[in-house]
Length: 293
Length: 326
Ligand SMILES: Nc1ncnc2c1ncn2[C@@H]1O[C@H](COP(=O)(O)OP(=O)(O)OP(=O)(O)O)[C@@H](O)[C@H]1O
Ligand SMILES: [Mg+2]
Image 1 (cartoon, rainbow over the protein chains, first blue to last red):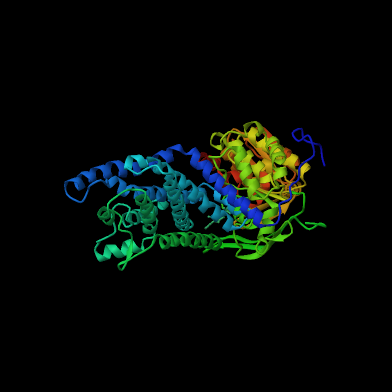
Image 2: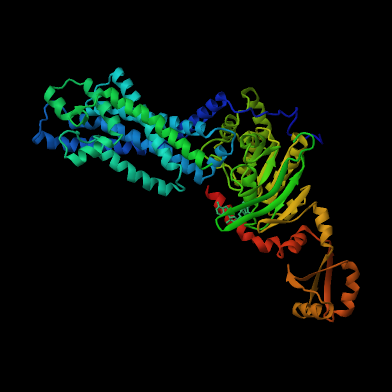
């Protein structure tokens, strides 16, 4: 060694980068997830702005349309706000999940993605970390909306809360996977947002978040049934209604469930669809990243 | 890399982007422990070469081994043994300096027990230990660059690639970054492969390669390259530059031009030429200076332009502005 530099007094700590292992992959998943949380927490503006839209839907649309119902339809002891509450939760989870996935485009545009891609780690660890991270962040955001349950006449019940969190997480995981698949190819934030807008609006309007899915014309009925978001919104509504005390007639109108050709799809099957979708979409995302490698 | 294997060995490396052949058959070897400089104008193919060496780009043809591993078939082994500072910044501005390094340590699987000590070491080396808790957003350009160097070193790479580590920085920061680089070589048994636009920096390298339009046009130690030019640079101040340039062409057969406000030309053994110049030029000379060839002259003789002409300092500013946006 030459003359020792003033800065490093003791001996130099040398690091040996280990071979790839499952343990290493888990560390990567964890740190990618951790970064997602740090960024979410740091970005208070984003938390607030993602809250605005659902609150508008809930308070403004919900209240406005309630008047319409009161003057005609079978209102009674139920409020339209209660009806769209689960839909609004699903919507805000969707927006946050997509936004998190979009940060991959951001990372590409601003260089940080290269730091990840040139490291001796598997692409799957990075993508899984991203999807779990996006799902966690989206669930946290969803939790904020769930806190507004009182405004919609939904009781604060710990069991209901847990059920909703669970369903939201599963949905968010699948949605983040979907977002990452899109983000894998996109080079700029602008085009990503344009694409998101194009994908999210139809998904939202065709999901049963804002109106019951019974008695629709065939074309609309078919579109809603192939929309994956439908199968996240309906279980949420089912658990909410399970904690309400409503007459059978109202239940039929507001919570008809999802039918396939007249057959009512059970909640467990809906959840199974969402649970399966997560890993499938994540696998496609991993494949996309490997291919670009 | 054991028993004298070169740290970097490149053989007939080619990269084509559609029609454009960005790198055309590069051959070179870098010995372990060397500081190797890559010099060339914009678009010469320096970054493209580095990207292939660090496994981010697949070569169209040819092969390269880094730290004893093939960059295509043994990518993970290469990745484990290299550190990188890209031309464009790759920090997460939302994280603090420390969080950026911690992310890197986890990504490379640095043993947990070593992380705090190693982190302190690299941060102290670049003088950022006190600022580790600040978000990178508020770092200055030079601090960001130093943080990137610290991060590139965190996992004790055997080969460190630096793509223009000092572009757009002020002279003081540049020289401090060079201090770190030279100290590094003493402290860490590391090979450094870097590109630069600054001739004075190239002088610090053990060997340099001059790259132009995708090929290496010269490769040697700075001294040998300068000696190879074999001509001294003569600058004269006259009352009538136009007449002097004409006279130089007519009487001595020399191509001269005005540079830095003086008539400039190159001749073998310049000092011996000065008496003849005074006797025969026929245009009054106010002052004369003779200098040994610099790397600038070397660059000029191989690429036909000075690196300043090829780049223009405006270019640095443009890039710096681009960097500032991030
Ligand atoms: N991804 C790409 N697709 C198409 N062309 C590319 C790509 N990357 C680089 N090039 C082209 O390859 C050539 C070499 O680029 P490169 O970035 O290697 O130059 P450089 O020597 O690093 O220049 P600079 O000093 O400006 O950084 C340029 O003409 C550039 O336009
Ligand atoms: Mg470059």
